[in-house]
Amino acid sequence: MISEERLAALSYATMPKMVTNTLPGPASSAVLERAMKAQSPTRPSVRGRLVIESAMGAGFQDPDGNTFIDMSAGVAVSSVGRNHPKVVTAIREQCEKLMHSAGLVNDTTVRLAEKLNSTMPDGLRDQCFTWFGMSGSAAVETALKFAKAITGRSQIVAFEGAYHGVFHGSLALTTRENFRARFGPLMPGVMHLPYPYCYRCFAEMKQPDCGTLCGKYLKHKLTTPNTGADDVAAVIIESMQADGGYIDPPPEFMKMVRDVCTEKGILLIIDEIQAGGGRTGKMWAHEHFGIVPDMMVWAKAVGGDLPLSGLTIHERYREKLPLASQVITGAENALANVVALANLEILTDPQDDLIGRAAIVGEELKAMLREMAAKSRFMDDVRGRGLFIGIELVSDKETRTPLDLKRVGAILQKCEGQGVRIMSCGRYGSTIRLMPPLTATRAHLREGIRALASAVAAVEAESAA
Ligand code: PMP
Image (cartoon, rainbow, N blue to C red):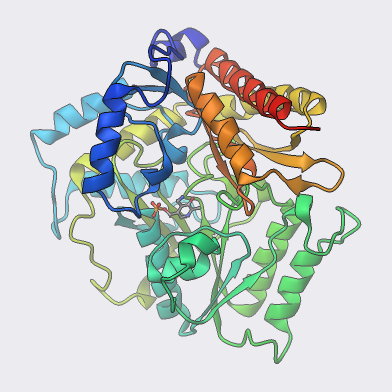
């Protein structure tokens, strides 16, 4: 397994390191002000106050010279860390040769498809083919179209709390209200069923007494006449629900999803965009549940420093897809391909075993976080697998009342003030999600959660008991 020393060499020698007394510093403020005028108000960073100028491994620097530990890995993208030396070398070597390929076959695309197909779980591995895009939303959009073409059916089943993207089709699957508002009507024919968010069970039941009620309801909906689900092409589900609250579903639920799809000839599309790529301690998170999808969408960590997404589909559906019917001009970019090949090589290197390490380090972090939560008024459930960790923040542990957005925001800002970037998620915006690079050292990770605990304690102290 890769040593802490080798990992440390991939990141800034000293981080976090704050050189301004306030955030944003003067140089960052100037960039933020220009962004407000020149960029769209719909951009993701519009409420943020951090500016990124350069990056190395698990850290990044702002224009004022502050160095941050990135406990969010650029939203679960930089699994191998940013600007990994092997990635930089791959870019240097490829950029002189070829970048844009547009409709022509290039060996880097073929090699990447072959490599990805070989990383799939048993049952899909090397019995599949891959389509390439540039964003997760585009890959989900494509999965929906393909599911309709393959089955000749029209309806799609998704889950409450899901996040699958922001285009008209994928947004119809995403349930976050502030993303949907004012963009309707969205793609019709979508049904949302309860997801096993056991901490906040829709039926107020507890495992295992619940008998996996949400799985039973799904089966009822898809197998009983006159439920409205009479033309279902696909069920789409995140392997671990990400934006919806970093939720680790019970394996028996995931097996029930697979079984009912098989029974009814419905395609199972697993969205591995956020949890996939090794983060959870397995290459693809659904491998924890022993199920095999018919199609798998992936993005984020595979492309890492360059935008890349795709869809890997079981071989048995090849003949059902109309030739040359899903074309994206900028896809199959050779530069993105060699970066993805480098990322996959780094992630799957058996000697370094970054994925195995993620499982071990994740358990260590969860144990520390649970100790912190036991002493904290706000920190409650700590869950997840590997370096995909969610922490519920509540104002009252008895009633599990979600901590309000103002105090969650204050906690995240206090983390940033200590040079640690952390993000939240969840249906109430009250779940902390830890998704650091797999190359962060134990020291970086410990510093990250120390900053979190101290930020939570400070906001607790400011709040009357
Ligand atoms: N699916 C999941 C599970 C995601 O986490 C995301 C992005 N957060 C998407 C789809 C959409 O990906 P993108 O932002 O690249 O369109």
